[in-house]
Image (cartoon, rainbow, N blue to C red; front, side):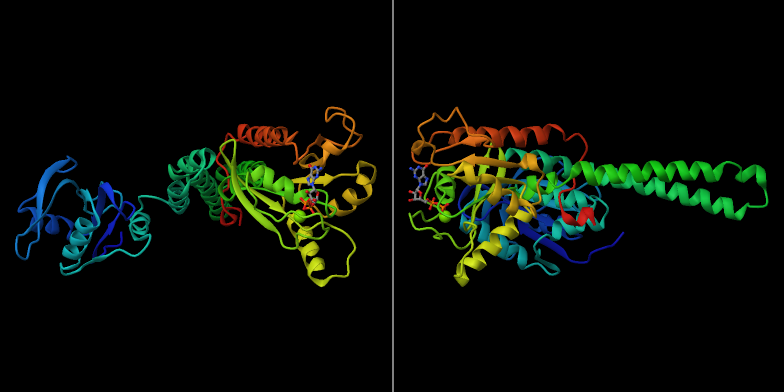
Length: 394
Ligand SMILES: Nc1nc2c(ncn2[C@@H]2O[C@H](COP(=O)(O)OP(=O)(O)O)[C@@H](O)[C@H]2O)c(=O)[nH]1
Ligand SMILES: [Mg+2]
């Protein structure tokens, strides 16, 4: 176990004014610091109210609730003191400066508490990543996934694989060492073969069933709005986002760069991208925009392909979706500007999955509900822990 000489401290709660602020001190001098500030020690693991004083001149600082976790049963595995003081800037600033005044006690670097927890074997790397995701979670889906991971779901799965590999290699070594004793090695080869085969299936399943879902949940499900110029792509983005995120004009070729808007749909983080309309053009800027559209299509999770002329749909759509990542079920063909058509939105032309109008808002809520359903079905299929970062896949 590594032993750190330095004691570290940091504000654990957000900075700014609040009812309560929490400071944490971790390391060999944590209990000494506490003693100096309250004139004694307190019972471990029991919230205790005490007056904190500046050890230099004994000036009172604040009356605070204190917790002491002796090593090794603490978050970092070291002695930890937690100070729950009043959450004003002045109280926090005073405490931080008093703590910094102790020898061998310093402000923690970002992530240093988690790092010490890792070094002391309190958490593995996947659990720490889960913890970071939990702290940053903004949606229900992210929270659920991050909590599972911070409690070690991924780590346990990978650890079980490691153990199987160790057992298999131990058996192989025994087979080599005792190759002249047939009764020892008999049948071992076949057993190892079975074990490794099963393991390979588990790993392949994990990579495949996980797909990009864990990463999607963490970084956002990627929806690309694409189609010919002037079909109403930017208008759809604005309707979904409920604000004027993209410029809408009657001039074809208005959108040149990809416009990205993060939003929450059904408790999931979604990244909706409005793109430049795809057409033959000589304009350099527009060509670059179209190149970016194609790029985004290639790693989209869902494509909303818009058209205001369903008769032309097949040519343009199929041609451009050939290099598109999601399978055909994740490309929805949407008839835009339905208000300009005589037939009702219910009667959709052939090949069209949905009809919408950004002008009258017809069909917009259906698009949102369908996206919600898609995300929920994906979530339901999730029984084993998911890969949340490219690092896990590697
Ligand atoms: N009537 C009608 N016009 C629309 C609708 N959506 C967009 N438009 C118009 O179509 C033109 C192009 O819209 P825009 O969203 O910029 O299309 P984009 O080039 O595909 O991004 C603008 O003049 C919009 O006002 C719609 O649902 N109904
Ligand atoms: Mg546009």
